[in-house]
Amino acid sequence: MTRYLRRRPRHIGAPPGTIAIGDSYEQPFTVRVTRYRPDLVESGELESGAPLPEVREGEVLWVDLIGHTDIPALTRIARHYGLSNLVIEDAVDVGQRPKLDVHQDAVFLSLRSISILPGQAELRREQIGLYFREGLVVSFQEVEGDVWSIVRRRIAEEGTPMRASGADFLWYSLVDAVVDAYYLVLDRIAEGIEGLEEEIFESLPKDTPQRLRGLRKEAVALRRAAWPLREALDGIGRVPEERFAPDTRAFLDDVRDHARQVADVNELMREAIAANMDTYLSLVGMKQNEIMKVLTLVATIFIPLTFIAGIYGMNFEVMPELGFRYGYAMVWAVMLVVTVGMLVYFRRRGWL
Image (cartoon, rainbow, N blue to C red):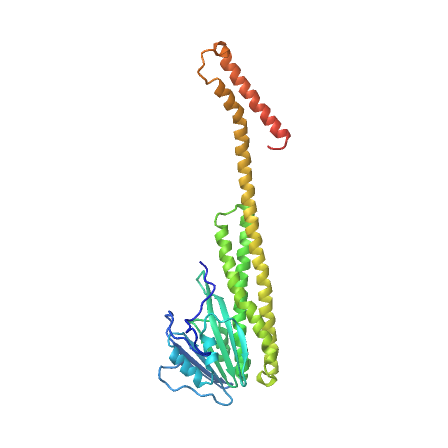
């Protein structure tokens, strides 16, 4: 059964901002810190109990919180950087609908990452939270591994626009990498649909319903990620002008357009999946009708033959034809004439 809703355990009746503790994740809680400026890059994992790095003027600090197994430690770190309980609650809620929250001096975005892992057939689905304010970006991930490798490479390379930009550009780059990964999923769905369309008309493979169901599940997952994200990014207009650099705001508009494009194309893919299922069922029905047609014709031909054989198979003593010397041959001749006559009639009516 498909699981459409994933939520962290909740305390019914608890006040807003209550962060539920306890889940089944095996991912150990990890804190990865990256600090950079045009002439410096520092990156590494923060050891348990180590002092938390502070935000410095002229630098960008990226704190990446991975895993939900240690909610108290995650909460302590998030509060240190000014995140409220409401933001933390949304960040660790794996069933949170993508949304954009604009605060007095910060912006928080909750979104879903849908990506393809090398060598694995299943899609990787993860809830992500992205918080930023001047000089600081805090990201929340469910498990290790993400689509941000290209962002880390840009940070490591000297002279890139990333190194010369602020936290708003890093925040945009993380969102953009997530949306770019949607296109890879979209391409996989499209390739699956195109391959199935050819096979359906050529051989009607028996596993078509299962494969279409798998494509539909991926399309539904992508829809649940792209559609709300598109709506959330529409809220960028509510963010004060000074929060984003002019170039970054233009880039964010481009990301919003990409999310809208993914959502629209994905809807076409879902319609194509439904159309392919209808086509498959129609062709299977036509094939079954052809089989039933042949069986019906065979049964129709044998009905009069069975009738004739049944009459002369009765054990009555007085049957004039039983004493006729050529009776056996005559019965066969009548049966052959009936068969040929019926085949000719069926042909003329267009049933054969």
